[in-house]
Length: 333
Image (cartoon, rainbow, N blue to C red):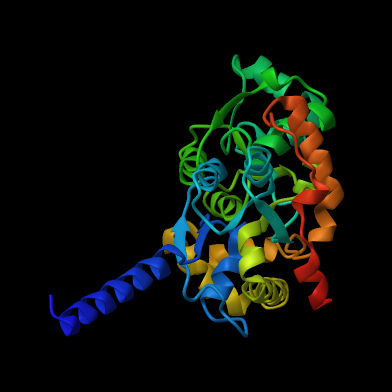
């Protein structure tokens, strides 16, 4: 092979190798199309000063356990996901750090028409028992898969707040779309669920009612968070800092100017099919829950971890304090 031809070949080979390396190092971001991940959508829509997600690869998931599997398989550099799945993934070896929170006290209990009156006309502690006695069956409750934040909050509410047996209800574990469909069709009696499903069901089912909000079910419950790989923190701390800065700004917009950012959220939540009034109602209903401060959920995360260990949904050991890396948020303060 002539020298010039060989040089051209080697140059092309090197260029191809570099292009392949760049493709494999594209930052992968996992998220769910739900209101607790709203900061993601605000950033993506260029509502913040910087959009660090502009050149990343976005991957949509339907529930937290799916994201856990992706993380354990070596996928995803960044995840907008519930604190429960983050703890599960970290306890199984994923090199994750929580750098900011998205929302707190997000899970509420929504009862449909047949079940709701039992909470309005009597003690909440006996609502399920009285329902079962009158209907001849246990109430059917839907929530997200085992180990997810909604599942943990539901179990905590039943055992530690209502002080009833988990066997007093029949629980069906579903993804977001399936849970919403079950509520809208009356296939279940209630749900431990989050936005925008709550606002959607309330708008379409006039006799549905939130009978226990998040602060009642699990006080200060940690919800969705922004988690990143430790490897990413080490290799590109400037990117992580921009990510957290945009996240904090997006949180402020969600709290203070929901009308402005609702169109951005609408593009992603529910596959972009939700009516604008539903999205805006969900954002306004979540006003007090949107929070970016990771310090706010430290204690509640420890409480949730201890409870997961008790339930047996978290097998591995976990240093909860070591799960957090607050340096990027703290710099902004």
